[in-house]
Image 1: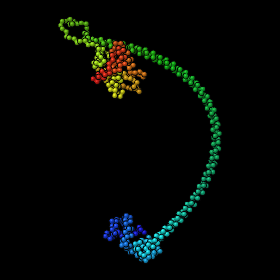
Image 2 (image 1 turned 120 degrees about the vertical axis):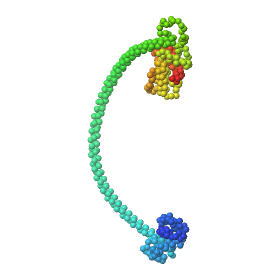
Image 3 (image 1 turned 180 degrees about the vertical axis):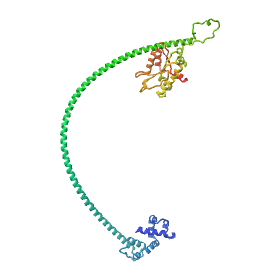
Image 4 (image 1 turned 90 degrees about the vertical axis):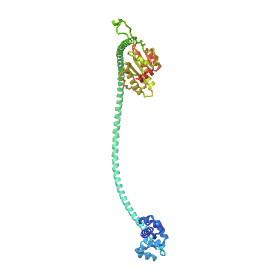
Length: 425
């Protein structure tokens, strides 16, 4: 009823002039009718309740369209077939004597209609549920019959499976007994085979050990013979080259003539002043003399042995070991090309996890100490391997290495002098 009254008032507001619309509703007059009924419903209901003139203006269209029903409602009567909502709307807007009774009667009629509708709907639901229950019972009975038939078939199948299982167990026990007997025989045969194999392996190990020992002795004998012959040949050749180079160096140092005398030497005249004889380099200079290494490198057939990590850690120890090795070996390659000296660079192999490949330049020999051997020991072996009389220079700032070089009749040289010489190159 309230919605119908509000919709009728919202329809009227859109058609009235602006000055005839109640002030609280003027701002809604421009809205579309449905929006007015929705957004201004509360304000329209308040205006209808308070403003009787506005309420009469809303009832005027209804007087024209429902004249018969309006006349009956104004007379305080309710037609039996009339719509309760329409009766209540007209009673609210026209406000005849006893209009509240009319509204209450309309509400009661609506409640009775709603109750009757609910009862009919409930009866229909009960009937539908009864039909569903009957169908479910029928389906349940059919399902039970089906399950009973399946149960009988399953019982028969289980009985057959039990019989088969009994036969299978009997066969399994017989097979298990045969397998146990076969396993016992196999274990006895395996034990005998293991004993035979162990005896054969023991004899084979003994024969292999004897063979390996014999091969090692033969290889050692061949190596000793080969190394002895090679060492003697190398030492003899090195000694001969050293003597030849030393003789040529002494001839240059003393400025000796190629022959004892020539006819022109007997002629008179004054000879020009000769250069003073230079002392043999190296022995008269101290270890800290900057010219020491330059003098030593002028010796004929000189062998320069370098303590690798002692030099690199003195000059550029902040670099990784691989970069240290590459930098030093590269510098020694240039030094060997300039001086024609034999250069051997020794590194400690104990600091390496695995052997490394080093690209040594021409004229430079690179060696790593073997497992269990230090670089100092390898340097000592290199010095002692040289023939007596050949000049050997050991570059190291390690006091033990320098003392060992002196005891082996080699000339020690500090690492700083080599670093200075390489920097100058």
